[in-house]
Image (cartoon, rainbow, N blue to C red; front, side, top):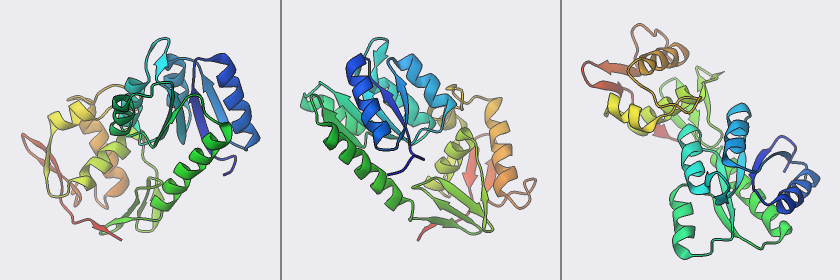
Length: 232
């Protein structure tokens, strides 16, 4: 692909980590290397990562849980790299949202091919769009345009936005946000942070945030996306 693609490699085997990193850099990818979940989370939170190559058995935790955690923050591409060949593990990986699953030992050429394949699929999804009146959303690359102008949302605002347009005309109770959406620091939303994030999202997408047409408050319950959304 090109050097704009940021790949996070989380692999505790030193020789394998160095070998994969060398090959990825040779293929003109930007590579961020980690050997533990703690390192991986720090890199992920501080950089715009496009794809994660993730081992399952790591010294400080489970790659499956790491996958689950980062997917709550952002819908990043993930390819598992693992010696776990049991069908139950492979199925679990896909159920958690993995884009591919590579079992060790593997060819670096095959790995590069799989990386390029999932990136192409993401690029193809980027051409799809959802329209809600003056708002156009491209799920593949998570870009949002209001009246033709691109708006830039924080990770938390984007997760709220996606939750709304995935459930138009449905009341989303506060507890659903509290249980499912993490903020950019890896903390769940709560009674004090949810209204602040809703207000900031309204300021970016509403013509008149004080009289919103998209995100309306349902007193005592939560919020509702009040406009129709259409896939194009």
